[in-house]
Amino acid sequence: MIRHPILRLAPLLVLAALGACDDKGNTTSGDSAGGLDTYTPPADGDGDGWTTTDGDCDDANADVYPTRDEDCNGVDDNCNGVVDEGFADTDADGTADCVDKEECDGIDNDGDGEIDEDFPDADGDGVPDCRGTEECDGVDNDGDGEIDEGFDADGDGYTECGSDETAADCDDEDASVNPGAEEVDGDLVDNDCDGLVDEGNWTEGAFYITEIMNNPGVVSDPDGEWFEIYNDSADTLVLNGIVISSSSDGDWHQVTSDELLLLDPGEYFVFGANDDVLTNGGVEVDYVYEDVSLSNEVDDIILDADGVIVDEVAWDDGDTFPDEAGASMNLDPTYYGAALNDDGANWCRASRRWDTATDFGSPGSQNQFCWPVASASYDPRSSLFTCDTLYLDGSGSSDPEGLSLTYEWELTSAPASSALTTADIETPTDVNPTFVPDVAGIYVFTLTVYNGYEYSPPSSVSVTISERPYNTDPTADAGSDQSYSEDASCTPISYGASYDCPDCSDYDFELDGSGSTDADGDDLSDPTWSISYDPGSYASITDEDTWTPTVTLSGVPATYGSDTTATVRVQLTVTDCMGATDTDEVELTYTCTGT
Image 1 (cartoon, one colour):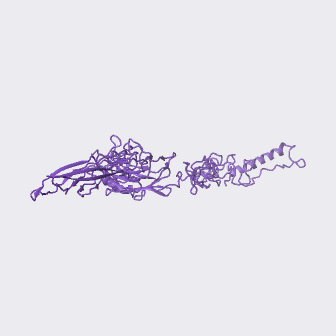
Image 2: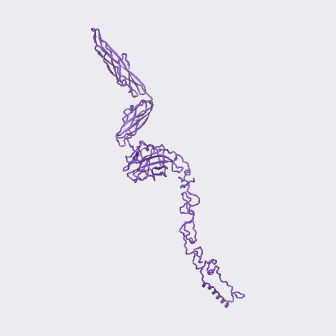
């Protein structure tokens, strides 16, 4: 404490002067009884040399008095009516930093360079809970004990943001859609918010990979990489939630979209790394994936839906799969299928461009064929009845390079009771051969074409033949009767009383049954000839199962001066395709005369 001795004498001098005046001239002041002075000077209660009269604002505290230096202690040390003047007050609240307390108000109240220190910050975002605003992030941002309050619009107990323990509500405007809901089959809605729509019915091969561009030429990898799938099922497939992955390099991507990605039966869908046609080589991409690359060497694509591997293809750097820059790996349409596309021998290098100045391939449309293509069919004019002509048709066959083709037809299956084989196909090397089925049932014909270098995969057509509901018996025509005469020279014996005559020479009668007919147009190609009358046993038949057999008469004897007549009847039997028969006879007469 600072003492001021000069100032302490001043009150005494004043009192002395006052006393002298009173003694000399003042008879009315002071004690009336004896004229004594009763004035008591102000006390200095804290001994700091300052009384309240002097301006000491706290005479009980020796550290508080006028003119002293102000300390930062929340006290008006110099009694000037201002507390802690001259000390910093960062938040300008009238309380110096040195005695101020930090409040949760976003201001550095105590001037230590930190804001709202020591207040709880549950989400660790640097903003204390007391002034935090709740965000949709699975954290109690405002420290009120609730998480993501205000972010469950439909009141189903699930928020649009989710948390570490609970998945997000994918439609916060529909209380029936949330991570705890049951999936409803066929409604095209992701009811349980797992990214998959109408899951539960996925099967292997519902769709499969048909084309892969892993090594583009007109643009660089991976901008021009893409692959194509084909829906081989009878259902419209929803591709949302499908997982694209690779076992060889760990690539992984789940298909996500705000819109339904639908793939109709018989349609194609292109996944690509880039959908900008100006930088991806001119490819119309249906969906852009991330974190997936298609290696030019050994790699694979796995397509998973709800835990079911729908399809996968692994290529082998050219060992069996094609491996050329600027052209896609193209699955031949003959070998479309989730199992058939595993075999690299069923793939070839695409050899046609999908547009001007693009790479080779066919993104989003049917692939080109790799080899000659056989197309076995039959003409609709065929009645499909037994015994009627079936007109086979291979005119749909083609060659990718336009080379001319030769044709090879086979009967590869027939009803058990049929007696027919490939040999019964009329002109089996023709593009349009014919065939006449003999019994009702299923016949299978297979066509293979050849372009001079490669054979096509076989193409088969199955034809169901019904029993013909009508029939007219055939008409046999053995031809006109024939006759022949011949003389034999006899030798006289015993002066002309008797003669020795040789037999007449053999004679061939040429028959013709081709005039036989069938009103239904049935083939009567299996005629049967037989000797029906030959009492002398002169006749024999050659080629009796043709339309023009030969009947030879031999050994007809001669008698001098008279005729010996040999009469032979030959019967023709014809049978139509339905088993009905008819017969006709021709009479052959041979007259032998001895002369």
